[in-house]
Image (cartoon, rainbow, N blue to C red; front, top):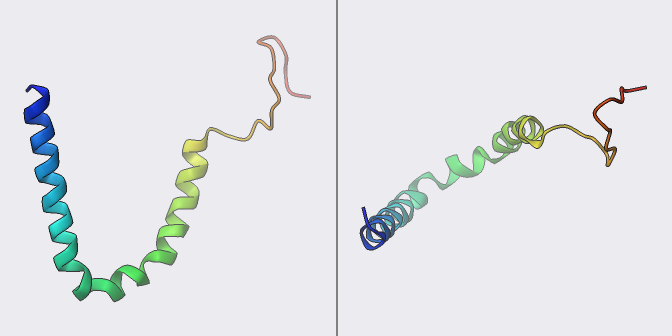
Length: 67
């Protein structure tokens, strides 16, 4: 797949998604806004999981252990 075919596929997929959102949004606006608090609750554990921990700028050498 060359660049122009990939770009055309990506553009058509983005256009289809935008049209779908435009048509679905007015009917399901209350449902989407009702899910926002749950989205925040779901995002917090995911951010902590993928963040990689809290090292607070402490860079240990390979032979050092935690106090």
